[in-house]
Amino acid sequence: MHVLKVLVAACTPSGMGILGSTTLGTALVGKEARQEQAAELVRLRGRARRAGRRAAAAERKLHKVRAEARELAEGTRAQRTLVDQAELQLAAARDAALAAALASARQAQAAQLAALREELAALRRQRMRTLLEVLPLSLPALLRPASGGGGGGGSGGGRAGGSRSPTVLLCGLRLPDTLAPSLADLHSFQELDTALGRLAQLVALAASYLDAPLGATLGARGSSSQIWRPRSFWCAEPPAAAPPLALHVRAAPPPQPAPLPAGAQGSSAMYTLSSLTQHWESLKQTASAAPVRPSRRAAEELGAALRLLARGVAAMVAGHLGPAAARLPPDWSPFACLAAMCLHVASAESRSAAARRLGGPGWGDLGPGPPCASVAALAASAMPLAGSLLLRAAELGGVDSEGLAFDGAEEEDDDADGWDVTSGVHAAAAAELDVPGMKGRFYGLRGHG
Image (tube, rainbow, N blue to C red; front, side, top):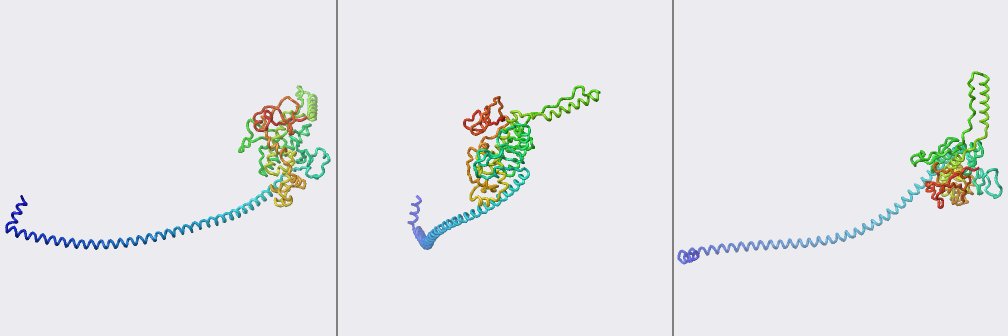
């Protein structure tokens, strides 16, 4: 309806004028719009051209950046190659410098260690000389010529190259050359007590000076010394179950003198004088009585103490001499080996001089040189240690006082190696020995005679 009204109005004259003006206005508006659109199109085309130019510039810049990146990557790879080569060269130079520095430091440390060993050997030599001045120790077999196989030796003297252990004298007293010494009379075991007391003092001081293992604790109290195995490394006290072993002969007490007569306190002065005279005579008879022979139990306890002492001495000698201990004669007792070691330490020169004099490795490699030419020949003999008293004493171990076995049999069983074997059952001792075929038996020492 509205469209029809518009058409009707346009058909009228007035309507025709209005329609013409409207068409003209519309055309003007459309022209202006087209002009604006053309101007906008021109602007857009200019903007597009500028954007294209910027894009082209960006493309060129991107290509340039990519080319620079490729150049930088190639330069980086070349620099990495150079760095790797430099690192390899630096590592090689560092290894060479470190090897040279280690060799130099090792030589310096070795020289310092050698100097310290020389100082320690000199100090030990001085201490050992002082000790041997206070407690003179001699091995007469070393003072005799090593040559000559015949001759039976002196009275009781050992032979340097024979099958028996040489005699060792300490302060002029003979040390036992067996672990079961004969206790024939009062004088013999009194002398033995004195010798063992001085030996205990010598061994304790020598172990301290040489810093050598002993494995036992010595209570040096003169002729009533004792020895025991310490409770632990930190506690030197004896265990409660194993009291110290007497390193002396525990002889039976002498008979007591007769008591005064019952009426000695009477009023008669002559009767009192007579009683005193009789008592004095009984005292003299008691003092001049025959010495009391030690009991077998005391002899076995002394043997156990000597065995423990011999084990400690053997460990000390082997610990100080090291491989050179194999050069000692295999039949020498631990006490003879101790005497040779002490004389060797006390009367030797420096290691270098000893090596030059001996012409090769020997005693000089482990400390001061030998005391005399016979020991030099002894060192060159290279006798094996297998089967020697030194090794056997070190292997067998010690015994506690509770490990002693006392039986009624008087006969003695002598082992193939020369040790006295006491039959009996002692599980702890058998476990400690760990010797094949020795279960139910352990090494103990009986009294001889």
